[in-house]
Length: 79
Image (cartoon, one colour):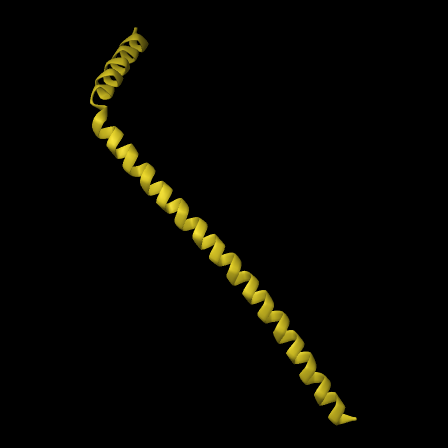
């Protein structure tokens, strides 16, 4: 009996809530646009992060080569 009352109230609330869906539809559209914008921004940030990661790796490799050259020059003077 209690379950029937709760179910009936839920159906009525759902039906009246769906009757004025224009405001909800506008909110959903607005949120969808915001999600799309954020998705685009995240994609751009990921691309920039990938570029930065590659640049850092190249700098580390160059730094290691430079340090090795300096070490070689220093060794040649010690001999």
